[in-house]
Length: 129
Image: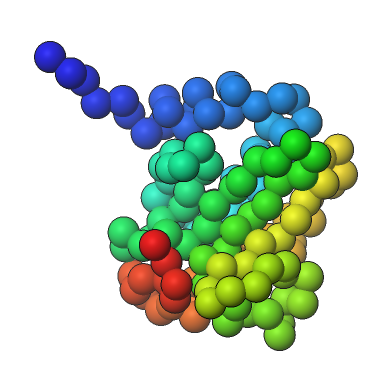
């Protein structure tokens, strides 16, 4: 009989796979995202920590060799208010964070709140997959 892996255990295992500097950045990002919007659901998808709201993807922490990205699925709508967002395309933008540098938690929290405010209560994010 198969058992379901609990999301918390899977997320803990994901953090365990990261190098120390990656883990520190990812944990700081996760803390800031959840401080801004504690009701977000967390899961591991495509090897990334994904935050969803009402079943729609809202944010993701994506680990790279020398930096982490906080992907914002409706980030294109926030580009004027947050010019530090990078990327092109219809909806997705990302905030690049270098390892071993402090995470600007106030910026991340403001970005998360602005993104969630655009969506409204419980609605899907623009450009979510």
